[in-house]
Image (cartoon, rainbow, N blue to C red; front, side):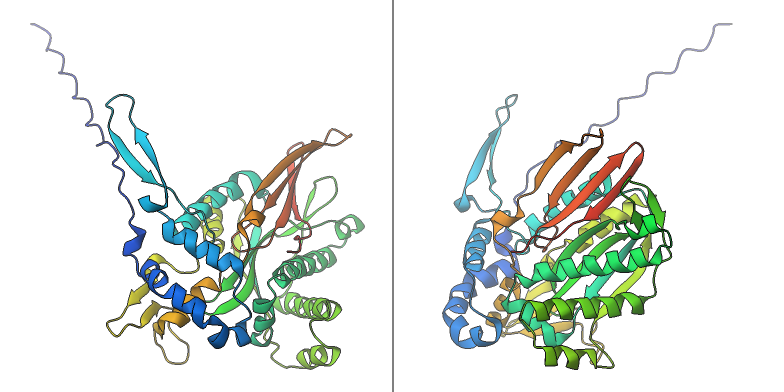
Length: 384
């Protein structure tokens, strides 16, 4: 009996169709069309309509809007790409790379930062996502003086360092520091100016030799009260608030300050960590959140209003432009990452990354490695 014939070889899997470059056409989005049509009228009306309450129009705003209107469009410059095999060609428009204004460029930057956060920065220990907010009465001060955003970041770190060190019992722990990566966001859910801090914080502190000491996480009221007192004292020292006004704020039963730290991440949750990294550096407005109405006004999708239940906000075009450009915070030169390595005499490698996270001023994050241990510590955020 003849042996059965071998089965014919399986056909090779169908290859995926070649990737095709498709321009994203930013000029078709509502935000682009509104800035293209109404930015010049906004500039002319700014002094009379907005300057008294919100401060002068900053030079970085004009420059960034001009760059954004050229982003992804051939008229703003392009690269000619040619395949060496088939000789096919296409034109690739340059990107503007502005921060917190261009949704496309900021989304790419957020994805790259989130990957770097997971792979290079965060120590493999449990973390907390902590959000620091301030009362409405203080928001106008930070809007008019953007340099104070650095003070806000430094105060958030000082709060965490002081409270977490106090939570440790041993003297070595008291001299240790928590690992912190901080990001400033200035936009709220309702197209408003709402400066607040997002911080990724270790559930413990690192000693000088890199040893991690877990600590019991403090109650929310402890962090909130420490943050309130430290920030008011810092603003008073900077001569931005009077002593009597600070005493008045300290007497409020409901202070308006808040520190929320309910979200916890285990050391193994790398996927959640990346999602959080993208969230805290996301653009101010999603591309699909803005709609042009037939009456010429602008509708912005929002979370449900706690008072009215409304899920959208209707704005005059100039008010919308103002809400968008208000989120543009820092000159581009201050956003360039700077990395350096140095070897200590004890043979310990310290890697420091000057990270510009989302909308933050420069925040220095030190990653120290000794053997298999790692620690991160946020040093002073540089003043603008």
